[in-house]
Image (cartoon, rainbow, N blue to C red):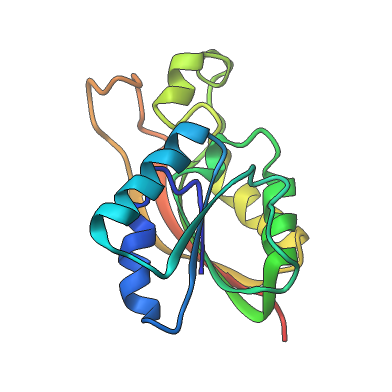
Length: 178
C-alpha cells in the first residue's frame, strides 16, 4: 500500500494494521520534516511494516507495478500537475490495483481570487478542480471505473477559506485494468 502525502504517518499506521505483518506500507511525502516525524512516530509505535520515502507525487520514487493499493487524504488537490500524479499512480500500481483517495473538488469553477490566493491553498481549496474534471484526469491516466463513493459539500460558514459553498470533499475509487 502506498500513501501519497503521508505527513506524520497516521494513515500509514492505520493501513499497517490492515495489511498485516506480511504486508508493506510506504508513506511518500515531499518534506524532509514530515519524513523525519513519521519515522520518529513509527519508532515510538514499534511499527515495522511501514517505510517512509522522500519524494513528490508527480515523480514517485517507487518501482513500476509494485503497489496493490494507493491511498491519499486531501493532498492531490494541492498538486499543480494532477495529470502527472495520476499517471504516476497508474505506473506504480500492479495490474488490477486500486486507487482510493479522498480529496477536495469543486462543483463549478473557483473564482480566480480563490485559486490565486496562497492562503486558500493552505486551506486545501486553492488547487481544487471541478469533480468531473478530476474524474476525467483519472480516466485519461488509464484507470477504469473512477467513481465517487462519497461526496460531502462543505457549507461551513465563517471558515478560514471564506465562501466554501461550491467545495466538496469526495472519496474516489478507480482500478488499473488487469
